[in-house]
Structures are given as C-alpha cells and as structure tokens.
Length: 130
Image: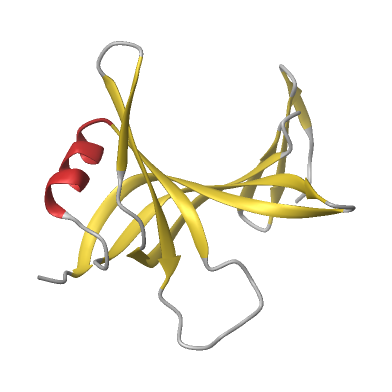
C-alpha cells in the first residue's frame, strides 16, 4: 500500500514494508537496517548541550567485489553506546551495526549525489584486530 500523510512539514509513505520519511532538508530515511562494516577513520567525540555525547566516524562496507557505488559512509553513535565504542573498538575492526540509515541529496556540479549517514542503535563486534 502507498499512502501519504502530512504532519508538520514531514511526509510519510509506506512502500513494501519500508518506511520512508521525506523532509524539507531532502533526507530520505529507511526505518531499520543492519550492516557488517569496517572502521576506516578514528572516531571523534563531540558534546551537544551539557552531557549528551555523539561519536562520529567513517566506516566502509565489507564487500567482496568492486562496484561503482558508495562504499564509505558516516555513522553517529549517541550516549553510552558511543562511549563504549570509543573504549572497545579501533580502526580496522569489523563490526555489525543496526540502526537508521538516511540519505541526503547534495548537488555536485549539475547533478545530485546521495550522501548516506547512519544513526547506530545497536552495535556488535564481528572481527577485532589486535
């Protein structure tokens, strides 16, 4: 089923059991997804307001063949999960992440490019490098 609802500048559509939200900032969000990824860059911690911490880093898909698609994207990990991420994981580790994936359309030249970003809800170790 396909339907639209207007709620405070946010459109909601349902396509084949995937929920997609569209806002005025050109974000498209899929509800939940899981990936096996490799940590590529060193995590950066930043504070929002008083005690809310956000850890952001770049990760890369664990893929077997080369394709012309995005393979690196940014993840955001909030709160205590982010602090645990800083404590236990480092660059070159493989992890399983579950969370909310969003795409922002960015204009590059005279065409649009999708820029993925994931907010991590759960995090599991997969292959840790010593």
